[in-house]
Amino acid sequence: MTKLLFIGDIVGRPGRDVVLARLADVRREHGIDLVVANAENAAAGSGLTGTIAQSLLAAGVDGLTLGDHVWDQRGWEQEITQFARVCRPANLPATNPGRDHLLIEQGGLRVAVFTVLGRTFMGLKAECPFLCADRMLERLQGQAEAVLVEIHAEATSEKQALGWYLDGRVAAVVGTHTHVPTADARVLPQGTAFICDVGMTGPYASVLGREVAPVVARFVDGRPRRFEIATEDVRLSGVVVELGANPAHAAKIELLTVRA
Image 1: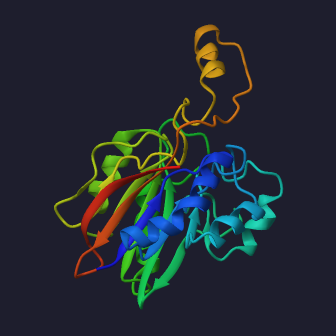
Image 2 (image 1 turned 180 degrees about the vertical axis):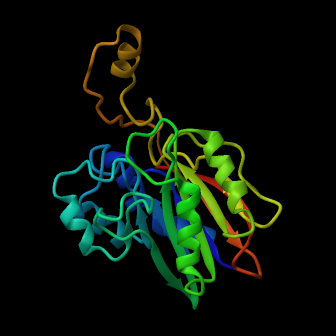
Image 3 (image 1 turned 90 degrees about the vertical axis):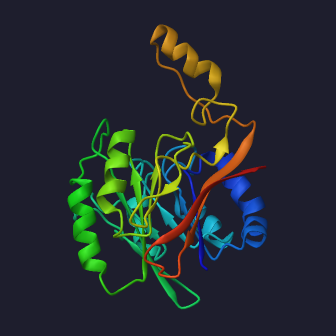
């Protein structure tokens, strides 16, 4: 049985450090065959750089995904084309650089991975995630035995709707972006593993990874402040998806939390 680990939004240095320090042990202890991580907040909380991408891949991550902060780091639009194991959201305009999906092979099993951005309360210009998922699945037909879809979105309703829309057609639909792990991990009736949000990998003594005091003050008086990355109670958060005898479907999904 193949086990896939999807790691939620890696936030800043604390998130990177816990991945680098603990991932090898997690892979061994839980019998993980393949690891995918969202790294869109890995560079100082916003975006990704080539150096950071290399370090995460060298630490044992098999593929990196991105979200609405994909272009926040200067020069990444050139660097992204150099990485075969990094993909941007698939429903961005086709003129955006970078790959719109990953194909990862492990032990003879081919797994396709792609991300769609939600459109409710989200800023980037993006195609309908439902229609994009249809298009991607048509393109990937025959190229992989299992498909994992990440929905990087704000609204839980949009995430749940996509899970039901793709139930039976993909192995897993996992949500990211809101940084708070949810308690709804389950396998849907037609065999698709689903969770609204896998949580963030970073400091939990925080407000979504940022220092508490300036965020609270901003809510109180509305004045702009610099939101530094917090440093305490660092955790790796993700989900482990076990594929069934037919790898196109999932047998189990569980939330995984590992403290630094």
